[in-house]
Length: 333
Figure (cartoon, rainbow, N blue to C red):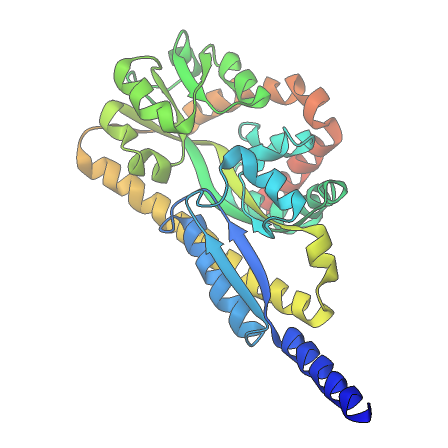
């Protein structure tokens, strides 16, 4: 009997030891390809996280919708089927957190400095707090970049937009933006944009240079206006229950790894947008229009009413906070 007790105790100890040594698995799912800034950022986080935790954490990256598609991944995260995602900021509106649509407001972020000040400061943190009741913790903001306009007619001043059928993502704010310019907004899935432009379903649209170039939109668009009027970004998020249950030292190590991966991912995004714009220019298929200061001022003036039009949906206080942070960032220049 005594021997049985000793054997049982040893077996229990061994099982507990093995369990304690098993790595904590983080499934990081996303919908873009591995060679995008988001994909490269996810791989960089995996590398840094596993090194920082000395193997106590294993990060499994699943790119290109291998596990879940756009519309499924947030539910999967909330259920705990995956632990980490990096959806675009526009995805939180349907989840009931409409405040994230503030990022869709044209020219509310006039520069990279303003963007960084918002995302890395108290305003960005306050937005992440709004995700916690949904069982989500926000860890970092990753860039896709600033958007430009494309069309088959030159878009230099607001009057040029009249009657143009321009593609948008499904967003009340973006709908208001195009209507303020006199254009007709057309909601179209990202995967359908090239064909829509090619067949004339839409006259043009808005996107980051890297998206325009990699999707070959420049081959079916005669003009690209470097307007930097809007922003596309992602939020790296984690299941709250999973995150809160992690040992404190592991959580601290992962936060450090995420900070480094964020710097890397955002740097890559800027590089790829710059390279894409250069590639579009060299292709000779699309004429690139650079706005004069006066023309850009006209765009800003025409689009300013959008802030008031969407204040009831997004929140006037939040819009005011973005404007204050942007003004402070511009003053430092």
